[in-house]
Image (cartoon, rainbow, N blue to C red; front, side, top):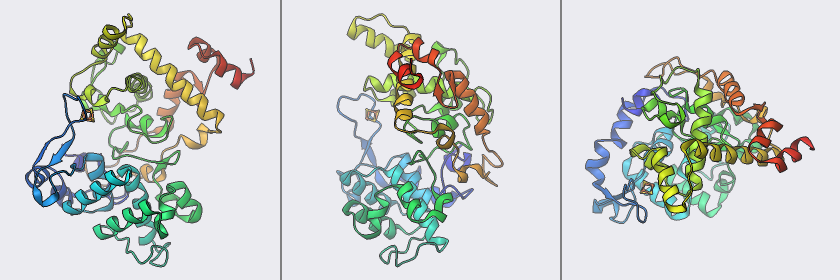
Length: 370
Ligand code: SF4
């Protein structure tokens, strides 16, 4: 089922139910027919998910926009001009701007503009209207050069809300980081990835929706795909996927390989062959668990209040009226509670016994004084 239809894709700053005509203009098959993409892998990658556009109309050395980009600065802003999105993606690549964060911040700005909270006087005369690709391109330049309104946008969603407090409901973020184009209302396993990753709403610190898309981790007991709207065990699954991905990321190996048939046992076997170690997949998960606990201890040291920060953004607490996820809201408090129990954390704080079990006595001493 297409992502526009199954509810995964954000539309109009996460507030629209369907966008079939727009999605057709920027998605497959038009994307391929128009851009004529060719493989353009990272160095030494045998899989090669990146695409180089070969249609000279767009510039043959231009990278093609990926799903997150088309989702966040396309559908999320209701921009269906593929040529403008290619240009915007290229500008972001050259300026070093993350397109997920850009889509989140402009979604906030377009919402605030439409609500009349900000106007042309605030935006240097740029009309932040849904579907306006000129506004997208203008704001990328302003953000990159820290000009006018772009200087505020460059500071991120929380800085924007500080200036315009009444716009808080439009900021779809966790711990200040914009939510990526993976709506937890459509895939409940994504709830923990979204609200309880250690660096905010980071979809590459867990990506637990994989199990609802058919990717299992039998080595750790996750032998069957799960229903995307079943909430039980999703806190547990969220923790397992975080552990595996933290282990995987720590090897500086792209996690996309997991989606193309390289499983945890393969990863561990390769690591053992290189190092001479004799790890098992369970050892690997324990390493990942230790990483997550260390990150959480660091966050607590820096003042994290999990009860305040690990919450579902208000816009994601409103159910869609149409589409494949109509009427669905993940019971995020229950899922979070299960996640914390799985981790042996109390309200987001690791118990002393867990830290000692993981060999993190120094962190235990810092939190508990002994
Ligand atoms: S699979 Fe990973 S390493 Fe390979 S091209 Fe894609 S992002 Fe790069």
